[in-house]
Image (cartoon, rainbow, N blue to C red; front, side, top):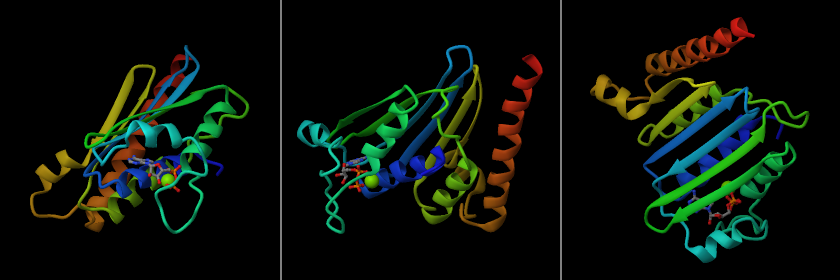
Length: 186
Ligand SMILES: Nc1ncnc2c1ncn2[C@@H]1O[C@H](COP(=O)(O)OP(=O)(O)O)[C@@H](O)[C@H]1O
Ligand SMILES: [Mg+2]
């Protein structure tokens, strides 16, 4: 996979399989510290300590369709190849948090890619789940929380095409504001 957004999609897929109703995704960049951190947390079924120990092993999976689970090992590899690391914490019945840290300027650090496309696809395909996306750059941030949108929208479903295009437009506008302002201060 050539883009971090595809790894995010894959890790969020684990949260969905774990029965989560709310999934939080954050992308935090700090140019001074030269870090890019991605965190995905869910309120799904969680993992026991035993499961958690085995989750870094590609031969561990609870899926029955394929004998090898590669999602987490591949995400860890992507982090480690850019001088970073991956941590997972989980509690049965509570949920799971996957945190990856990358060295932002590392030559092997993959680009973020189309996070907007990933997020809108997740919302469109899972309109009954709540997604909260937060992105920050050097302390400035924006967020999109579908539970807030749901309150404003009332009976209008999140996968309504007008709502989807508003979400995409808001995402693009806000991420341009984030990166644009940094360019001026360099
Ligand atoms: N967010 C999560 N909540 C509960 N269990 C998880 C979560 N993420 C991963 N797991 C467990 O770890 C296993 C390995 O995950 P992964 O490496 O992505 O491979 P795969 O999804 O192909 O099985 C999953 O099959 C599942 O049992
Ligand atoms: Mg997986």
